[in-house]
Structures are given as C-alpha cells and as structure tokens.
Image 1 (cartoon, one colour):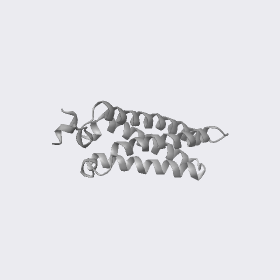
Image 2 (cartoon, one colour):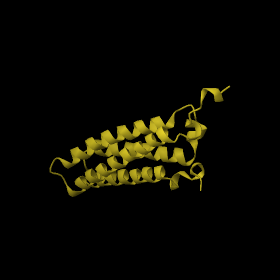
Image 3 (cartoon, helix red, strand yellow):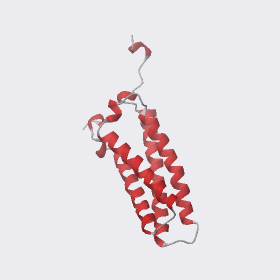
Image 4 (cartoon, one colour):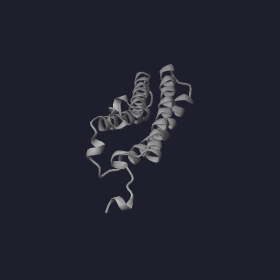
Length: 144
C-alpha cells in the first residue's frame, strides 16, 4: 500500500499519536482517582482535548482541506509545549510524598512526554526528508 493512501490510524504517526492520547488519558484518570491538585487534572485534560483534536483532524483529512494553516508546524509546536507542561506536572506529582495513584499519574505523564517528543520528531523528519501533499516544496520553474 502506498504511503499517501494509508489511513492515518494505520501509520506510524497515527499510532504514536494514539499511544500519546492513551497515556495522557491514563495519567489524567490516575490524577482524578487520587484527587490530585486541580492543575494536574486541568493540564492533562487540556492535552487530551488537543491531542484528540489532532487525531480527528488527521483522520478526516481536514489538514488537506484547510490548507491556509501549516498544520505540521502547529503539530510540532503542540508536541513541544505538551512535553514541557507534562514534564512539569509529572515531576511535581513525583516529588512530594503522595498517594500511589498520583505517582502512577506522574509516571504515565512522563511516558506521555516520551511519546510527545517522538511525535514531534516524526513530524519534523517527514517535513525535512520527505515532504508530500500540500507541504511539498515546489521548484520556482514549476510555477511558470
């Protein structure tokens, strides 16, 4: 099967993004169960919402329909910002003497950070080495 015709959920990028969503949801669930401080729950919930938005965007191919926004750059920025916020929340959850569920939420948050970095690296690599679709670079003489 050709790369451009493969559904998003079967691609490596899709699998990493869905794993990232699952880890963030798990982290948020542990924070809710342990009644962790509210910023932990709010930040992980916000990240779940944004990741879910990107998954829906790519599954419905809206990134190709709405081409006035450079989606890969927005996705890379999201991955980096998510990694920073989740590192802060996870480390803060692991530092004090807390419940087991809060520690588990922090551990799953750190695993989500690894997936965020992998997700950003996959998108960056695709842009750098193999641009395709609406992000393909065109030569100046092709426009004439």
